[in-house]
Amino acid sequence: MQELSIKAEDGYLLAATLFVPEIDMKKVLIINSATGVKQQMYFGFAQFLAQNGITVITYDYRGIGLSKPKKMKGFSATMRDWGNLDYKAVTEYVIKHYSDSSKFILGHSVGALILGMNQNSDVFEKLFFVATQNAYVGHLNFKTKVSAYLGFGIMQPLSTKLFGYFPAHRFGLGESLPAGVGYDWRNLILKQKSTDYLLENSKVDISKNISKKVFVLYAEDDAWLTKNGVESLLKSTYPKLEPEYHLIKVKDSEVGNIGHVNFFRSYNQKLWNIILNQIN
Figure 1 (tube, rainbow, N blue to C red):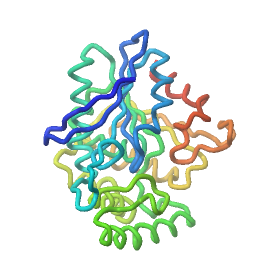
Figure 2 (figure 1 turned 120 degrees about the horizontal axis):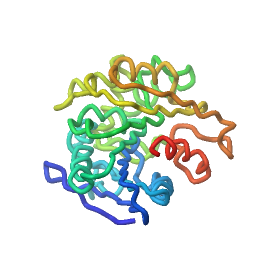
Figure 3 (figure 1 turned 180 degrees about the horizontal axis):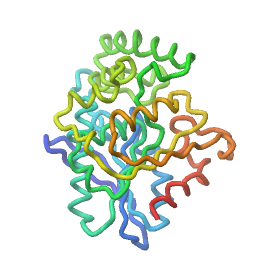
Figure 4 (figure 1 turned 45 degrees about the vertical axis):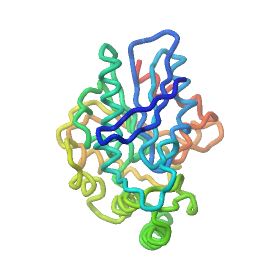
């Protein structure tokens, strides 16, 4: 495990971690994190893949984890920055340093949504979408709809105005977020166009032109995700992708818990072979 610092084209330094296998299979995977999730969440999974010959790079978007500024209040960052600048910078690092390796990308939640914001997304041999969808509230079940309207319709704008950033941790939504990211998350949930709305405001949008195979993994017990939302993303936002869907059932987990992020926790390690087998 090696710590890296990768500079985005605007000069912002991103904290990244490189997992290097002892026996290199000439395959490299980038992991794009979910919103408010630090790269450490993926370390166990990354080490598992490295033990099986795959090089893995994890990183924190600006405003998250080790890429967070000393002061969050007033810090300017959006999800478009995550895609146009941060994800692009990591992809360029891989292209430069792993020119002779097969390249793969895993997008967890928002980490898949931002693929269309980077022209270099075409370099990947195969894509992996984990727990991702068009997150419009209309796709959610009733209980989650109520939480979404309360959380993003009321609490997100009020708390962001009060603190100068979105204190997502106070609502059980992961790391605190830059104000712009918080508002982007709000738009993903409350605007019917969802991901397409986000991409319309991006400097780059190749979402309608990416033509790759994508392995789409989602969990039966993910309260923030529905089959309609998953299919909407592939049909509307990424229409040229060739999806293979895989539903993980609760019984497949040794602890009966997968949800939106727990696929990557060590107690679900036996599930990690699902992705390993797809890479190999």
